[in-house]
Length: 620
Image 1: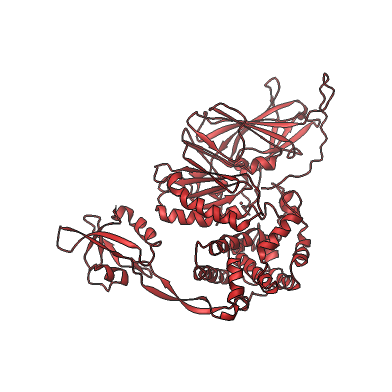
Image 2: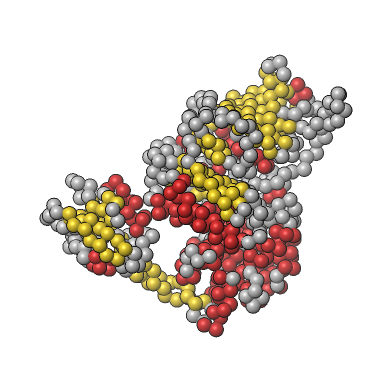
C-alpha cells in the first residue's frame, strides 16, 4: 500500500467581529498550541482557542477519515481528557456525541478547549489495510526528546463551520529538534515554531517531523526539496540516501515539464525499529507539497533506496492528481461523513502508471523491465475482482465488498492509465499521450476548480478521442475485463517468454547458502548443484562466505545480503572473502557477476513496423 489534501469547504457562518477604535472587521482565527517539551504517558496536550461564537452550543470534530487513506480511522479515538473553558478558566459542560465529536455548552463564553493525544506507532499490530491499525504514514509518533511525527489530522480538529478560517499553529519544542515541513515558520527562535495556514485543509495537508537534524536540501528546476530522515540507530542518513532520491526527482520533474509549479516539496522518512513497539505499516502518504514515508530501519541501503524510488515517485506524481485535478468530493472533502469520488482509476491508477512510465522514459529502467512490471500488474489484477466496475468500487471503497478490492487501484488502475495512453498515442501517431491529457485537465481545472464526477469522461473525450470514451464506458465504468494483449499489440508488443535473472543465492524458494550454527557464518550448502554465479567465481560446496565487496556478512545480516544482491547486474565487479571447507585460511576471489536466468511469461516488442510508435509511447 502506497498511501495520500485538498482545498476547502465553503463556510455558511457569518462572523460578527468589530474593533470599535478602528471600525473595521477582523478575520476570525483558530489558534492551536502544542508543547512537545511536555509528554505524559506518550501523549501530548493540544490547546485550541476558537473565534467567538454566537450560538449557545458548538461541536468540535476530529476527522473520521482523511483524503488519500480510503479508510475510516476515527482519529477521535486517540483523544483523551477533552475539556472546554471560558475566559475565567471555568470548565464548561461537554458531551461526547460520537467517537469523533464533542458538544460544548455555553459556546458564547468558550475561550479554549484542551485535550491529550495518543500516538499510533506503539500500538500498531501490523495487520494491514482494513484493520483497526491506522496506516503508519497517516499516524503519529510521540517519542519524548527524540522524535515527533505529526500528521496534523491526528492532533487538530475543527469547530463546526470554521474549516475556512485562518489557523495559527504554535509548537514549542526542544532546541535540538528540528521540525521538517513545507510550512513556513514565522518565529525566529529555535524553541518555538509558528505556522499560519489559510484554512483547516491546508494545515492538515502539511505534516511535520521533529527530530535531531538529519536533512538534505537540493533544488530541482526551481523546486526546493527537503529530505529529512529519522533513523533511531543511525543505520541510515539523509546524505547517503539522497543521491538516488535526487536523481529520481530530477527525472520526475523533467518528465512532468510544466505540469507542476510547486516551489517546495518535503520528504519525511521515518525508519521503524520493528523489534520494538513501533510502526508496522510501510509505505507512504502524499500531500500537496510533501510525502510521509515509513520503512523498517533494518532494510539494507540498496533495498531502501529502491523502495524510496518507487514509493516517493508514486506520491510525488499525486501533485498532478488528485491535488491539481480532482472532483467536488475531493475538493469539498467531508472529514466525518465523506462521499467518495468514482475516479480512483485516475487519482491512484494514473499516478502509479506515471511512477513506472517515467522510469523508462527517463532511462532509469529499460523497456523490458517496464513490460515486466506491467505484466506483474496484470497477474495481480487477475487475482482480484476483474468484473467489478472500477467507478462503482471507487465510489463505495469504504464499505464491503468494495473495500477488499481497493488494492486494485495500484494494479488495474495503472493498467487503465496505460491503455488510455496507448489509445491516445495510436490515434495521434505518437504525438500525444496521457501526460498531454493530464496537462489539459490541469489547465481546465487546477487545484481550486473541481470537476463534477459525472462530467469527467465527457471532458476527457473532448480533449482526446471517441475511442477513449468507448474504453472508459466499457472497461472502467463497465464490467468487461480489459483485453490487455489487444492494447499492447497496438504498440507492436506481444506476449513472449522472457528471461529474468534469478537471485544469486536462491533457486526459487530454495537457498544455495546456509548457516553454521556454531559460528553463525554463512556456508555454501555442501554437495549441492551450484548456479552460474557461484560456478563462475569458483565457489564450492562447504565454502564459508565471510565478506562481499569488503562488507562482512553472517547470520545477523544475511537478510541484507539477499536484498543487496537483488541489485547486482551482470558483469558488475565483485570481490568475495572466503574460507575453503576444512581450512582456516582466508582467500579473496575477484571476478564479475554472472546471473542464472529463468523463463517467465511476459511481453516483448515483436513488430518492428511499430517501433517508432512504441518509442513515442515509452520515450516521447
